[in-house]
Image 1 (cartoon, rainbow over the protein chains, first blue to last red):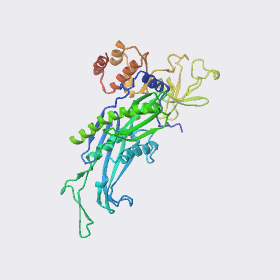
Image 2 (tube, one colour):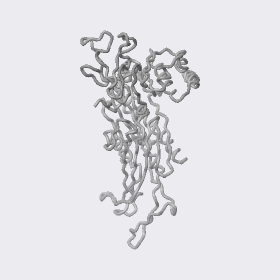
Image 3 (cartoon, chains in turn cyan, purple):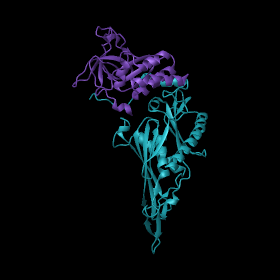
Image 4 (cartoon, chains in turn green, purple):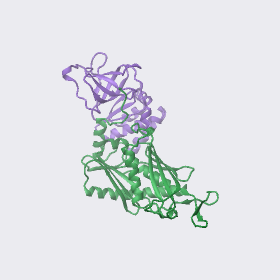
Amino acid sequence: NEMMDPRWRPTVNEREFIEQALQSDLRVDGRRPFDFRKLKIAFGREDGSAEVELGETRVMGYVTAQLVQPYKDRPNEGTLAIFTEFSPMADPAFEPGRPGEAAIELGRVIDRGLRESRAVDMESLCVVAGKHVWSVRVDLHVLDNEGNLIDAANIAALAALSTFRRPECTVGGDDGQQVTVHDSEVRDPLPLTIHHLPIAVTFAYFGDGNIMVIDPTYKEEAVMGGRMTATINSNGDVCAIQKAGGEGVMSSVIMQCLRIASVKAADITSKIKREACGH
Amino acid sequence: MLVFFWQYVPSVEDTVLGIVVDTKPDNFLVDIKGPNLAFLPVLSFEGGTRRNIPKFEIGTLIYARVVKANSIMNPELSCMDASGKAAEFGQLKSGYTFETSTGLARMLLSSPTCPLLEALGKKLSFEIAVGLNGRVWVNAPSPSNVIVVSSAIKESESYSRLQQKSMVEKLLAKLS
């Protein structure tokens, strides 16, 4: 019973040093407070599969779709759902099987960013109103947790959605409700209609909430006082905000974060579009 | 997380850097990155008596010596050298700590001084403690020195001895 508790905790030294260094705008990995880590986006051979590396954090996204009956109150719309899986290899704190609080929050923040902002067009996923619609599913696998899973997983979702292709269908038959799903050899599969890319930008707060950094590492997350994620697109539209715990933050600080997030969102949007086009 | 794979097998007389995870009446429980927690008896300090037991909060970083290690029991540590003196053992305050592979730790402790530490020491002032269990502590008056030294060490996991010196020179040139 003297086995190790696998959750990592910072030492007194790390906690004090990280905060002290931030007083001089220094971060342990050499970044400045509002620098993102190096972002790499790679695509798999199948449409709709992407792997994102944000520093040492790694997340994969897979998009799949199937024809289902629509919800009764939205007969003309397809559906979109986000599923998250945290591999125990990614972090000793992840328990296999049960999604922890972090896994659930991750899924909700990404889902909300996409859904509330209507980034993915749902009406174009309707094949036969009231009967057949496309149900799009995004699976996010966390492979390595080096901090800021939300931003990395969100990019993985967007990159995968950008390269996903669904089969083309035609509707015919006597009743006009017979659906033929065409094989991709016969008819080119179609991309989703994506109106904009909601980019998640996460801030970590330290000290009395007067020090903040963007894209926290694993250690910074363990030491931070609070966190806020702003989901924003390159038009500057705020799609969602999630403030998770910690002390209250002044509205002037929130506004500053949104301004910074807006600039970062534009950079990341260009990168996703560039990589997806090149694929 | 890479650190998950850098486990340490405790060996008697190894000097290690441990983190206090719990306090019991007779022992501090210390994480030394091994398969089991290590025990540091509360009296294993120079001049230690029941009345002057150190107050270590959870997360305290300790430099200690392995005095017992076998496959059956939890390893035991001491903060005294063989003659009962504190020497350099005990709590390490301030500074920054991070994990490395046990191989890199051995390289940092090798004699003569490895090219990495020699190149860093020529330009920067800092102090360092290295645990054979793959944990390093760096301290310096300026936080930026601490960060440069820590980054250089972490970076050198993948560099040979020959490459270290030029890697550090490049790094220091970038800063000035």
